[in-house]
Length: 68
Image (tube, rainbow, N blue to C red; front, side):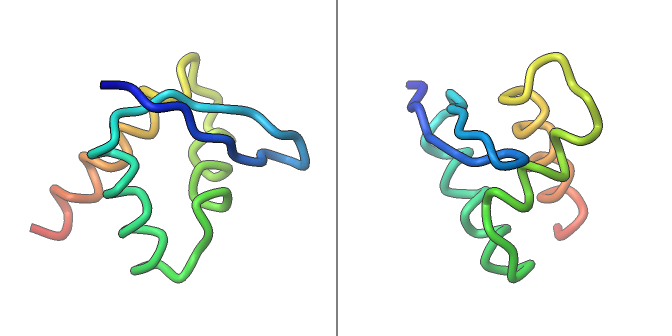
């Protein structure tokens, strides 16, 4: 089930809809990388994806593939 989360990108508040499991993994990645969720999502957003929520999911999947 999708959940909405508010984040700040380039000084503007926005929301993303993402499954709880992906949000939990994103929080873990932020802790491991010693970054905020906003910093991680901003770096994903800079790449100019059409759908930010999908881009976040792909980022998480690629990250998990690299560490396993």
